[in-house]
Image 1 (cartoon, one colour):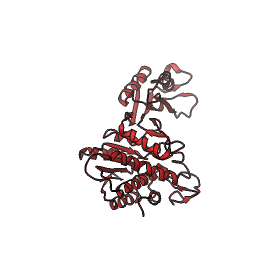
Image 2 (cartoon, rainbow, N blue to C red):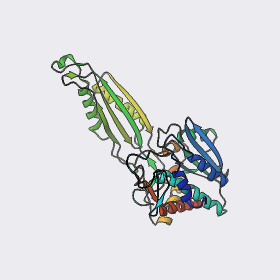
Image 3 (cartoon, rainbow, N blue to C red):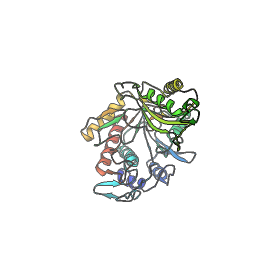
Image 4 (cartoon, rainbow, N blue to C red):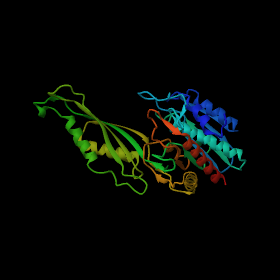
Length: 374
């Protein structure tokens, strides 16, 4: 296949049904393509997850592309075209992962192929590709970043190809992400008859007071780059089938999406303190998906913005909204930003990407490389 055209590689990747944690040959397709361009490819398997690190050149400046070959399931319902057929229809490529984010990976490769074909001087170009972004993300990019640190490999800049645009290619660059904390709260009381509440200790009442205290005051008002942090209660569970029994336990789950005015440790301490004010006997289980981070606008991001404007005519805004991404791990290695396709169809039936967007994204990546290596 011609690697300067992103479509054939994008189709080949879509046809590999790499639903996390299965790789289904997706990374082998990529390894073969990168090897043919002259990259040295290092497969990195952690647990059951396939990852890879590929690099060409050994000098500075060092530009890294990062992304994932794993995808979510096709979901329920009937697709117009098979989710793993890689069908082109009506000017778009259909298939699971077309926009999130096998299309962007194909654009990485096509941009590099065009750059290399032009014979320009460069330092190093690398790709960090994981198979565990859509899953628990414990055996993917975070492990590769640790491996890179051990090898003393630190890119000057990394661009993650996640879909960052809502409607039109060129709208948005992500320069940071909010942190995410999930908490499970269990309040223990004393079971009893509802007619004799003085003989019981109702944990539901205590839990309701706790949740009210947690939500009555905003965590912050946001700042220049981040919207206000948000605490959302996602579940309240008692599991009591009886109408005349005060239960012994009550449970709740909540999520905090927090900006860079907080960190997970301080938020956990705050949660524990509020809960302890209303309940003596409780359990708090916290899982942190990632801390908030920000890559302050710099010359590298300016190069990316200029490349986007050159191709699309749009001046992209810098944003930190949305969910988490693997950029939360890469930020501990080097400066990182995100720019990819339009995400309107990601994780939906009939996920697709217009071929024109695929070509324009390739041109943006190539222009960014050109400017970065100049």
